[in-house]
Image (cartoon, rainbow, N blue to C red):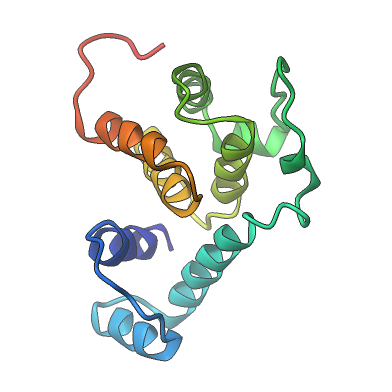
Length: 157
């Protein structure tokens, strides 16, 4: 499923091509690209739920923006997001790339991924996808894109 999301992001979203989404046509194209229909359905549902997160009525935690709070991760989140991934999220918040709401969106989308292993590089792509889909986050998106494609000189956090 994550491979499909990456394919869509790199070929449609990130390339800034104008896309009129016809699920059947997109499913056919992804099938021709070698992806399985069941995984395609999961990936498209994941993207739809990402778009739905912008309506924070469904996610009441997105309506709150505490000025100083510590995020406590659930056991399931700790199992998916290793120490370096959680540290990277803190780093992004410190830089101002993520705020409370976008961090929660990222965690929500990570937890919905159907993938046995999840790496820090995968997290970076999820952050990029979330920021791309949230209006008003263009600067944060550009900053994250720089972090994704540039090699760091020293420790990130």
